[in-house]
Image (cartoon, rainbow, N blue to C red; front, side, top):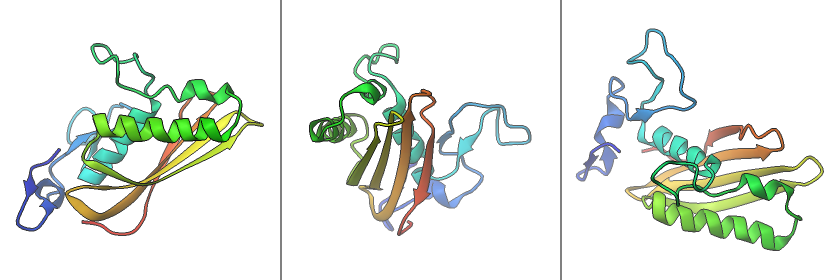
Length: 158
């Protein structure tokens, strides 16, 4: 995370496009880039990547971090009910409080398509140090197991 500038509530490194904030995923070789891997240039892009990775990680998958992750892929074949949707929402809120405490969740929208075993999760959020930075991330889990994801920008920027 970049160093915050408390005077203007901006992130210093986000103003300098020569500075990378984090590693972008999926990992891949970048020719002619800043380094060997693709990188994120802004804090909001780094946070979006962190959110996607957190949602796509199975609990116990990360070495030495057995509580990191959410086990959302296993819910693809669960019986569709309001309880399951509430369980997913509560799990997201709990895990974000532990692993991404600087992210304020504004809205969580879960769309289940049981005919094709798919869960679409859309999360609207902002960073607590920049309350006007409303953004969203969409992650799709399907029976292909690819955890395809996309993100869109909503209102505000910092």
